[in-house]
Image (tube, rainbow, N blue to C red; front, side, top):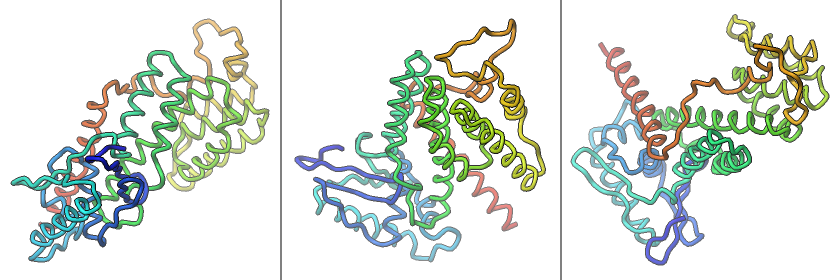
Length: 315
């Protein structure tokens, strides 16, 4: 939370859009005001063009009075914030609007910061600290981004941020498996694989966690279910890493044992369990600023591509 005068306030976008001041929820307006505020929060500290706000509210069919209605929405949000003790946080610029608020006041910024610190700790060979940071980052999520607000701009952002959330979870689980916490993560992995059945790395993590928990048959059943799904839905087979893991489970390969029970490594061979870990070339975010800029760049690129596609379809 962050203080505005003597009042503490916080913004939440990782789930239903919420604003709190001094422990009390700030009453927000209808869909237009909420969609506008959510779009500003997704790019906090950056000027959001008016055209982006129009798309967030009306998509492809803004009325002739749309820009005037945006100004009315901004004025209403400002009055709500000031009246609740949050303060006037929205700036007007020639190209659009910008919301200025401390990073600690926004759950998205806290998630990005904690995830970046977790990756740094993992790189520095501090797995316990990394897991704690990753779990704190994941705890910022209370549901889909801007849950309940139907807007193409917000759906695009939600898709990208969900991908980042799952990547952080996979990195966290990978460390927990290395630390021998396979039984602890099985239930969570079952749930996540059911929701994200095409994520082969997560499926591999579940297979390994099951095998290490003495559930070889369940691990192999999970592989067969994934193979059947990929074949039926996409016409493809599981990737090489997953297939290799299945063969290792069938053979009860000693390299699948937990790190607390080390086994002699075969000369020149990498442990099979390492196949489900993040690729070595995965970029490690060591700076909160760098990570935030990368997210903004991805959002902007997708939005620009969407605008180009719309222009093409109108030709």
